[in-house]
Length: 424
Image (cartoon, rainbow, N blue to C red; front, side, top):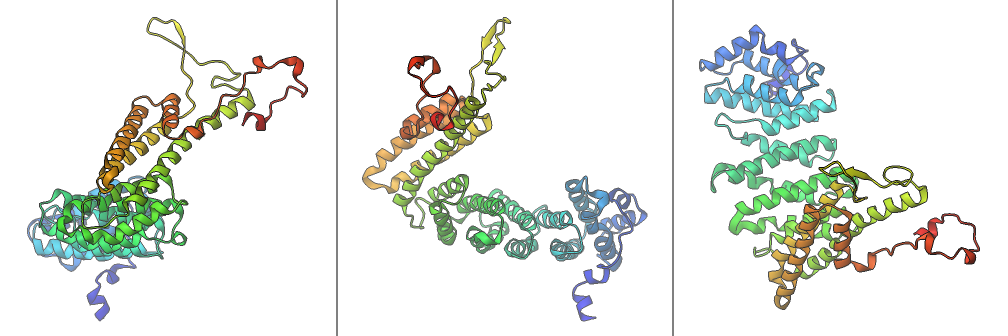
């Protein structure tokens, strides 16, 4: 009996929802009575709790709502909470919802999509004044840190913490929102140091990339307390040095660390600059390598971009046929390369102040690197990538294969057959 009193959701946990779709609940007499009662200032009674816990929140995982899950969360906020006028009743309802949503996010009895939706709604739940519910911050942190949960639920909870960081950024310094958000730093420290065996690589990278973004935003709020992010910075340094981690994540780590320049956190600036040089080359080699791979594929198959080796043709505004420049690298890959170079250039510029006598040299290098990154963005072509490689990693340039027409056929002793080794 004591357990039931302390956790009212246990009273209704086994009840089968009466309404299989949210639209049915919205149009029901029960929902109309719920809204009428609470709009009039009535306290949150047991019958209201029953509707919230057995009919309202289960809409997050019912199959009838599977095609409109994000809309369901917005509509539930409106019908279940925005209609409550009494502050005490609102707090009672939100506290019950926080407890139940945390339970649903961990539940093995509902679909994984339902658990994800519950974690997302926990992160989106609003207080009466429109701010995110502060009592949900700790349960969200616990979900993020729970290694027994599926990665998608932990990611959904992390999004909720990110929403709070954004809200804190937009709030006045010294507000309760800012004070509350500092409490997530221990969770950020755990995420940035997640061991490889705990999560799939893609999930781990995503969580750590978002953590670095949130930490950068939080840095602007901490002011003189920036040293609170010391452990996060140590995790970022470890990522930059780990060559097995993705290029993008290592770049995001460098960006975050560069934003700590000038704070109370000591940085191994020289080591970071060394990593930055490595990442510039790796970024360009990846893009340039894609170009070379596609050229190689075309050579050994004899198939051009139009098939059969034909050139790509187009028409000018007057309708005259013109040859279109052939580019092997997809535009999205060019834009990624641009983002990488510009991000690294800006990071070098921020860190250059810690390089003493070499500051001017690094500033000039950063300016030059940024120029190439912007050019790739403005002209996402193979030629732009090649120009950058020639400037920063000339040893990677692949010489053009000798044209067959220039070979003396009288001196040809081997059969005329394409050799992958020769082409490479």
